[in-house]
Length: 139
Ligand SMILES: [Zn+2]
Image (tube, rainbow, N blue to C red; front, side, top):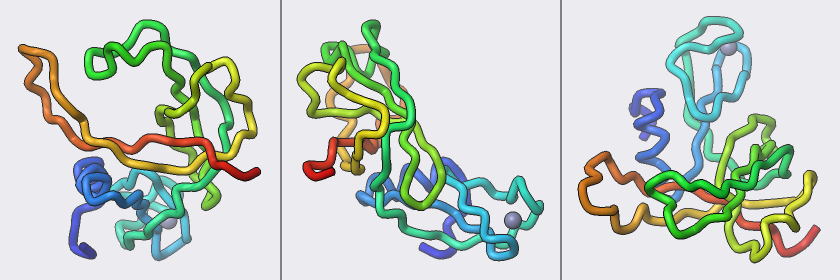
């Protein structure tokens, strides 16, 4: 896995293996999720893969009433920006919440994974498995 390129495609390949991975710059320690081939802080290309805990807190969120094609039937759902315990922020859907209005900023969540599932007829774009967030049971 160490020789995978530091790209969004590699990121989703890892997601398909149920791993949330970031790239850490070996020069300055900057952690990038999703990874980038060049560190935006020091312009180094010397990176290593780091597996993330997938745990973090809801920093902001939006309740979606008009879904994208891939999520049709699941509305309303919540897309949150999650600040991972390791520092980086990533957006993701928060599932398992009956009433999206009950999500609060500061809620603890952790990552889970789901298959992309059946596509509506006529949709042919790549169906990567995706990461989602679920609310942590404690705290
Ligand atoms: Zn760097």
